[in-house]
Length: 193
Image (cartoon, rainbow, N blue to C red):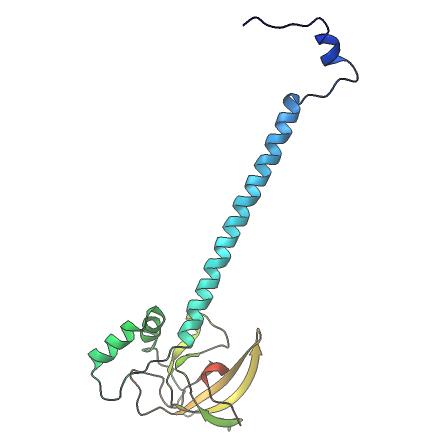
């Protein structure tokens, strides 16, 4: 096909009032804007994935605080372990932390407290009023008799510093011994007087 050249092409394309064409500078600007948008989407996506991962970790850590292990009183250790395994990952994590024992200083005097109550839901007793794996002291079980020592609200969640006075008789694992102090979420405990 022959090229079609019109005599007025020069005037039509390069006149002062001619429509502007992109050119290499316009292409470079378009490419940079496109690269910026793609980069922002990648960074935003990575941030969102990281935020979701942190949320899942917080949920998993919180889930260990709300573990309720319901096993009949007269079961063997193997049957209790099978029940715990069937209840999921959060319970397995709590079972691993159940061996952690808090040392009570010999000769320490225990303060009177603000009231007494009991554990309603089993979960973790912690060194500090926050959910983190390194703060776990051991497990408290439903039926453990406790004394409320202090109340604190952290990030909108109520925590109580408690002392375990008498462990429940129907515990299915190793919990914290009598006299152990630590922090527990108010969701795990009866309402203080």
